[in-house]
Image (cartoon, rainbow over all chains, first blue to last red):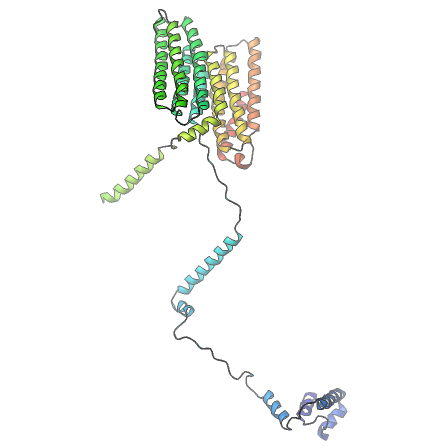
Length: 271
Length: 169
């Protein structure tokens, strides 16, 4: 008899304190089982002191039989009412290939959700595009042409073009620009005529390299350009808001003044 | 069959036409805004133009042309400080054009026609040195990184301006 068998038999006794002789031999020879038996006897004695009604003599045996009986501890499973038919998951699982699609959709949702949570919260930059200024480009082109012009008469022609540009820009902005903006443009037109065209025309008039006919043709071309600028400014003045009219009339008057001065430079004053 | 060929052909023709239209015209409001932005610059450029129109001596023309480039350089620095990449590109292109096709040929022509030991030759040398200085001064204001410096158009302009500096030296 080994120790485990002895202890099981002692536990099966109605009173562990009353050990039969067959078991006593082992207890005498085995100090470990003897110590265990003493604790079991003490426990039995203490249990007997508890104020509880005494159990029937066969109760302990019945309980031990139940605990040591083979089979599952849980003998019945509570049932849950189920609806008739198949669940949505069962239906998805049953359709061929659909569960892969559902899995892919779930993965996309997970990735999308992660992106929404983790994406940078920085506000997008507002990109403002500054367009090029065509009028600035025209003025630059005129300056470049003036740099490249080899002769005084070529420079005079380019100055005429610069005056045209300034007059046209003033007219195109007459309806929307303030009087101050328009006055700036008008002052520049007047400067080109007074400080550019007229002085340069005087130099050209004295040039020996050009014939009188060439000079006449040049001045007439220039005079016609000024006349056209003046007429267009007059017409624009009639169609423009009141604040723009004096500015446009100033351009018109300066154009006529330039024409007169060019005409005076020709022999006979007939430009 | 004819429909099959006609529809792609019409589509291609329309695409080509749309691509050839270029940028849309500016509105009057845009025109006015740009005029106000460039008011001082345009005034200075018109002044330079008038001066160029009445100046005949090569050394004086070179000096006036250098002044014109300097005016553009000042505006370019302002655009760079304002972090306006589009404007830096626009003004840088104008400066490149004016120096490359204007100032450099005028200086070359003036040098050819000016005796080496004359007072005009000294003036021309000063004009050339000042032009290089002006160009470097304007170029230095353009940042090498960030919104302006990282713009491919601005980088292209910077490359052209660096090339011009070498041509002017």
